[in-house]
Length: 479
Ligand code: ADP
View 1 (cartoon, rainbow, N blue to C red):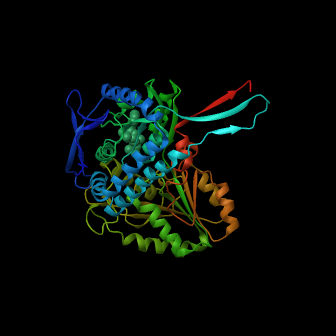
View 2: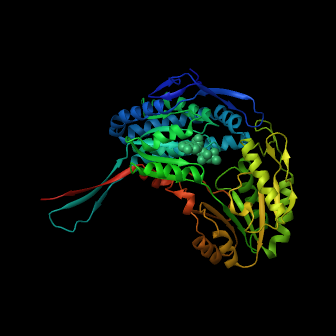
View 3: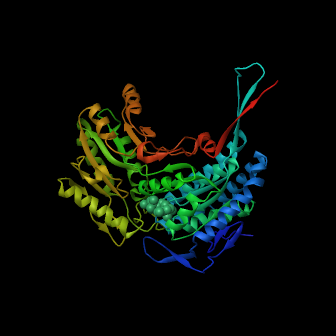
């Protein structure tokens, strides 16, 4: 029987449910503003239900053999694979990104399910050489319990699998609150998980416009042992403070302000390609996208015109239209923010080499700004739009100072063909991730995460599963 990808109910304790008061909210296509569906608008009471269900499911789920959990994840992976097209179209309709990017997101998101299925069986403990003859010292890895996950709209599919798959692989259960902009992708994932045989209560999906009320329950309920969040730095700080009351573990993937540094000795074409890929994916609405392009003076006269040329060819449109490379921004608020940032730069003396204006109702022309200085908003803030601000520098030391001059520390990119410089830069950059001669670094097999105010904790790699476990030290005496 075909699985219904587009659900119109929330998912609690293995059942499709509505809000107790019957409230619902609409989901709109960000490009056209046309409604594409509606879902229940849940509140604190239903959130409690989800947490209680997740707690009840924890004991049996965590006691299953690792291979049994892995088998469910493998079936889930297979079903996602079989529904790639439908899922991708749903992602594009919900968040606006071009279809090719949505297909890439489904593949990327599904790679976390696959990786977690594989890693579920490799969550080893430790035997520590003892310091006493009659003792043996061991470390067990045990799943934490109920995990609360709060996710953003910009990757409505993969930001969920990146948290949920390792959590449930490790034996945890989850109450998930997806973004109010993109609840449909989350429900589609739940429908496939249900079909894959995930037991009731292991994954619960709370659709709501009451992020604050639901978030408060998720971060303060005594049965929740961990909060994992991807979103803005301001909300992350608030959630961390709320979680402090019951000393929950916290993982945060917050904002970034990625420097994209091009040295004189870089491969010119590769650096332009890298900048395009890093900057304009999802119309610049990714937390790792190049936010500031720092170019060494000797290459800037060739790099900037080439980048401008490439930017002018980008095709704007609806994500489902063939050929579209840049879709809309997610909301009027996001669009207004991009306009503010560009106006601020121009007022302070930056030049607009291309773009700089709205394109239709909700999109923005891909924009290249030169003469950008550290005082400008586009240098200091996460722009989250298709705007490439360029700053020219002279020395390696200056590049490092400029790059680290931010409270953020998620991703940084460096283009150089000098091996020694690559090492110096990789070590000097205060970032959780550094791409050397690449603008795309995300993969399920490597640890993704930031330092400073970009967050804490890592997603992807074997470290990700460990973040959903507690270490238990066991001392066996009297041997
Ligand atoms: P963005 O600017 O990327 O939308 P947000 O941090 O506002 O970033 O949103 C990321 C996620 O956090 C979304 O699921 C949103 O609903 C949720 N969120 C926003 N405010 C709160 C809050 N006060 N408590 C809990 N979750 C919140």
